[in-house]
Structures are given as structure tokens and as C-alpha cells.
Length: 74
Image: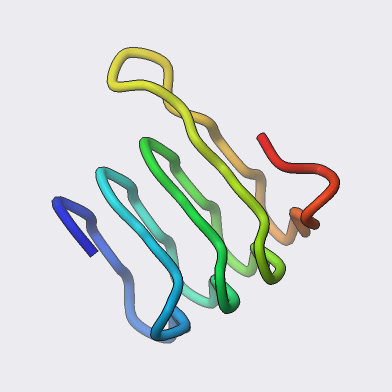
């Protein structure tokens, strides 16, 4: 986890990659998931092997309670 803000009660799997992102409370980032330049709202789930990648000037925003699956990768 590089240059990220991770809120309490969030779960980040050991082999998940999170960088330059804001992870709100209750978020679950599963095994093999990749999150870069993103804002993940409260209670969202990033499923195994899903990819959520924005840019420094256009981060991806995942809404409250949303679920991102591998085929939905952003």
C-alpha cells in the first residue's frame, strides 16, 4: 500500500495492490485485486483479481456499497 489512506474496519488482502487511493471504512479489497488512483466509498467490495485504475488527475470513484467484479474492471 503506497501513498494511500486506509480507513478503519477495511480489509485489504495480503496480495492485493493498493496505491495512491482513498479506501473508506468497511471496504473489502480481495486477493489479487489492484487499486490505483481510486476513491472507494464505504462498504464497497473489490472482488478477487478485479482492477480499478484511474489517473492522478482523474481518479476512479466506486460508490457506497458497490461491488466490482473481475469482468467489471475499471
